[in-house]
Amino acid sequence: MPIFALFYFTIEVLNQTLMISERNFYYTILIATIFSLFVAFSPSPRSDFHEASASTEILNYNFVVSEVAETYPSPKSPFLDNSYVAFKEALAFKESQGKYGAVNTLGYLGKFQFGITTLELLGIYNPESFLTNPALQEKAFLANTRRNKWVLRRDIKRFVGKEINGIEVTESGILAAAHLAGPGNVKRYLRSLGAEDFTDAYGTGIPYYMRKFSGFDTSFVTPHKKPNSTLL
Image 1: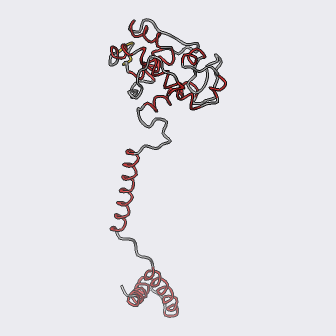
Image 2 (image 1 turned 90 degrees about the vertical axis):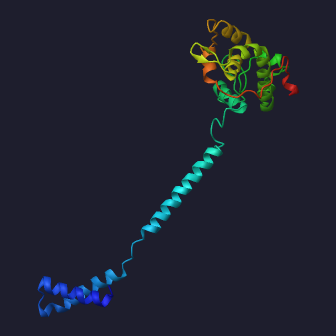
Image 3 (image 1 turned 180 degrees about the horizontal axis):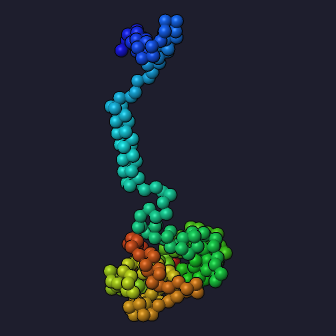
């Protein structure tokens, strides 16, 4: 409605409804003017089209972000996938919270908590130097896992996919248990169908490790009878 028409319409309404006397007519004009200006210059609301368009853009953006997040998981995630790297990092976190300089109350060393005897089997004879050498600790873990896989190669072939004590046997579960208990104890556990268990000094047994670390892809680890960490 044009502003002048709105102005006169407002005056007429006020006169009829409020029965304003002639001497107060100027007050009526003032009120009508303010009301007309307010209506005329008030911002018009956005159209539904713009609101719908903005909502659609937000939804599309959220969809794209979600799709990218699923395709490329955040590098800050504790476990990016079920790879060998995820396996060793999960195991390291359980052993020492991933700390290379860790030494527990029983004297086990490093990120993966190696015993002195195991280190000597891998050709490592200086524990102090080992603690300050992250690269050597990573090599030692791979070398030891390769050795365990060689010792347990027949048992992996025989038992993977079966169930023992309510736990599905997987290769990664076997290798994790071997890191905890040694391959010989894991072999006895499997061949006794769980009757001969092993528990470490802190009360952790083979079934716990077999369950906790099941389902990782450890095909990267090739079995080796006498791997030497210094040659990897």
